[in-house]
Image (cartoon, rainbow, N blue to C red; front, top):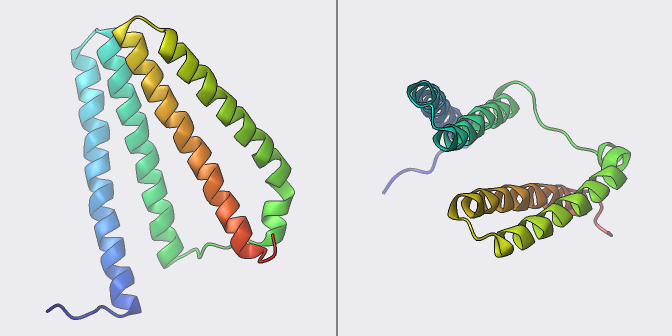
Length: 146
């Protein structure tokens, strides 16, 4: 049976694991860049660019998590959310509209390649909608009555 780690040990292990993950993301970025140089096929390059961009963003989020655990604690106040909440809600409506547009286009599209790219866009837009929903959960936790 493994011993349960205490707070500082758990944080150190989390940071160590995140740094290893960042190393893997940097490798993915480099690999995608290398592969992009080896092909002139626009479709392949598009997919590789998507992966490279996602890996870059993952690396940034991992660093944010590391920083939040080691140097810059995360804070969020009701005032922080209140400043931007109306704009967030408006943008979330736009995200939902783009999801519906993409789904309609995919349904009508007879071509495999374009249909696959539309599927990617749907997944990404749904991810954006989910992330904005997480902000809504933060808001509920900050405002216990609404």
